[in-house]
Image (cartoon, rainbow, N blue to C red; front, side, top):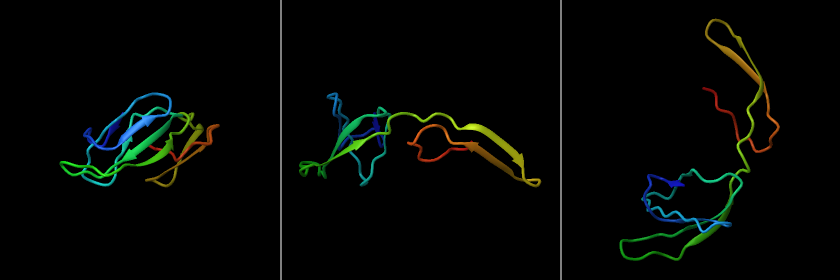
Length: 102
């Protein structure tokens, strides 16, 4: 698991494992990556100075169960001289947040 720029503050624990991650951040936001799919985490965040920290505030967060399957039946056609129209069928999954086109 990686949090922000790999520094320390906030604790991330899985419900099933005693895994934890500490990150110290200067901004009130963290992007935690490389977590396990389908896992329940307890996230605790505290405000801190160089010598003290506040009581933590915790929240339970569930990651999506798994990576969705790929879109099906991808088709594309030219639109004029400078466009492409893409279409596809949604995969059999209900945990899709969106699509990435590269």
